[in-house]
Each structure stands twice: as C-alpha cells, then as structure tokens.
Length: 471
Ligand SMILES: [Ca+2]
Ligand SMILES: [Ca+2]
Image (cartoon, rainbow, N blue to C red):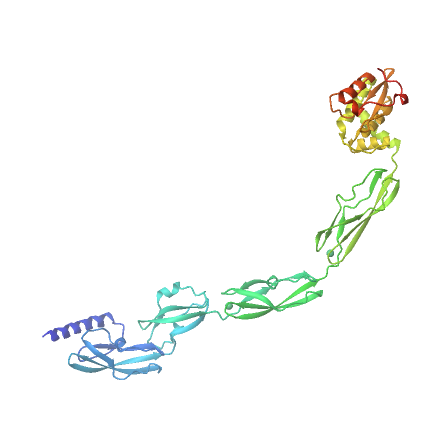
C-alpha cells in the first residue's frame, strides 16, 4: 500500500517537474514514470547519470549508465540509463550531445570572455554566461577567475586564466638631445609607456654618449610577465662649443687714490652650465697714478670654452678744481647770502658732523684726498673731518690753518679759524663728552683737555707754530 502511494506521489512529482522543465527536451519516460532528458556537454566534461533525470527521488536507487558514454566524442550519442525502483528494474534511453569547446581557457588581460569562447553551439543548443559575469574585472593579469556558463539551461562552472602575453608599448620622445658625456636614462627617451602590468625600460644598446651627432638607442621594454619589445629611439648628442657670455663689464673712471668696484654687476652665463664664475685681473691698474689701465675678465664653461672681456680704468688726477667743485656744491646748499662768518662756520661744522661717519682709521697726509673721501664716501677719521672742513672753510672765504696734536697716545687734527678779528679753534670731529666744537677759545680748549683726561693731551699743540688763539 505504502509503495503504491509512493509511486503515485513520484508520478505527480515527475509531472510537476515536467511542467517546470517544459523547455527541456524530454526524450523518454520509463514505465515507472521516471522522466529522462537529453543532455549536452562541453567536450571533456563528465556528466553523472543524475544529470539525465529530471528529479532526484529517494526511491530511485542504483541509477547508473548502462554503458559509460564517451564524453570526448563530439556529436550526438544515445545514452542508456538503468535504475531500480523498489523491486522493479528498468533501462531507459536518453541522449548526449558533446559540443566542441573547453571549460578552461586563457584570455588576454582586458578581454572579457563570451559564451562562444567556451563552447561552439550547434543548432538547437543555447549557451550564455551568467549575468554576474559582466561585473568581473578582467584587467588584472596572472589570476584565474570562475564564470558560470549556462549550456542548454544547465549551469556549468568554467575557469578563465587572465594572462598578459602582450609586451609593453611606448612612443619615442620627440626631439631628445643631450650634451656629450651626459648620458640620459632609458626612461628619458620614451613617453606614454603602457601595459596592463608594471613595465620597465632598459637599454638593449646604449648610444655612444661621448661622440657628438645623431645617435640611436635600442630600448628594451619589459613587463612583469616577461613580455618584451624593442624600441629604437634616435636622439642628438651635442657638443657644447659656445663660451659663456660675460655681462656687466664696463669702463671706469676714478680719481687717483680712489677705488673702482670691478666685481659688482659682472656675471657670466653659459648656455650649458648656467651661471659660471668670472675671474677679474686688475693687476695692471695703479689707482694712485693717473693713467688708463686694462682690466681683464675671464670665464670658462665645463666644456673648456672660454671668453674674455677687457675694460679700462681711467685714473685721473685729484685736482683742486675737482674737490673745490664738490665743496662748492655743498656750500651752495647750506649757505645763503648775508650770513655772518660765525653762521657760516657753524653751518659748515654741522654739515661735516651730520654727513660723515667717524671711523677709527683713515688716510692722512693729503687734504684734497681727505676732503674727497668725505664728499664721496662720507666717512673717515679726524683727519678726514679736519680736511673736509679746511676745504669748505677755504671755499667759503674763512681763513683757516690746520692744527696737529702734540703728545698723548693718539693723533688728532683740527682747524684754527680767523673770524671777527681773532683766531679760534674749530673741530668737527665727534666728542665723547658734550662740546660745541664749531668755534671755541684757547681757554675752552684747555678746559676740555683737562675734563677729558690730561694724559690724552686732547688739544695740546705747539703754540709756537701757530698764531695766538683768542683766550
Ligand atoms: Ca604586458
Ligand atoms: Ca658652453
């Protein structure tokens, strides 16, 4: 009784499945009601007997091929299945069509597989890839990915090995050149190197970097998978034959005893080396004697190209006229008509103090030189202050005499001036203690000498050599 119910149920289940699988070609139905179907396969794929029946029934035991199909033989073949259902034993016939193809294939990175890559379908068969295949990234080489092929409605796992068998590609860089003896890297010679894997470039044959002219480099492009390509690139190797260009060298005119800045503003630039050093040879110049002297500038680049420039320094005599001219310009700015002698002296004193920086050293022995230094450089020691005062006072019409210290640890120079019918001291040098040095008497000079420090003999001088100063 139980067995009959089982058979009925089995039959109902079989019919239900038959309805569900209306698309599949049911070839045969056993006496026991077991439905079998035709199968297709990809060459080499081994099917099981269960692949040929449309349901899995627990009562269906000992299902087997009556004879093992030849899964490698292309084309249709009949398949006989034997099974037992309880005490009943039966043999039922189905068919198998082996289609040419392969379940494992290798594709170049970047190429997406299609169903036809796995199987060549014949009329009446369909093969498509599962929808999720569209989302797979096929650009990474060296990996194996699984895809599902649906062959006549039956899912079938296939493998795709993603390979990189394509060598890298690159374009030669246009207009590449270098200097003789300055090799370039292989990578400098190409542009746009491309490959699905990491690519490197090396020299297969390096150009002769030591010879000028057109040169050819043979480059080897290699990817991670050992694919290689050769690329020939032509380039130019140039010899630097252009010397540096010296700029800023110019003639100078100075007064004897003066100096000319022969360096500032002089530079040399080379087409290859950029800024290069400039040497200055001014050994022929005698700044203390009138004359016209050459100054030689020279520069060289690393390729041995040299350039020279010659300028001249004209050294002129330091004349009264010249220095007086400078003095007159100063006086024109500080003195106006109608000023008293005292006012004039005061203005000159104040101008000298305000326009000269006191230094502990300076040139001595030449009043014109001292005055010139004050007018042009604005700095000097007490001699400079004395000398420029002398020239200014003289040009302003104030009679004056230079005075020199006697005794003490240091030299000192100042002036005596004749105003208002008498001689007075005048000293434009800065003071360490407050003192108005523009016009002062002999007694004031002695008092200052005492106040400062008698051992310094500040305003001590040989009175026999000078006119008597107003007491
Ligand atoms: Ca490659
Ligand atoms: Ca050069």
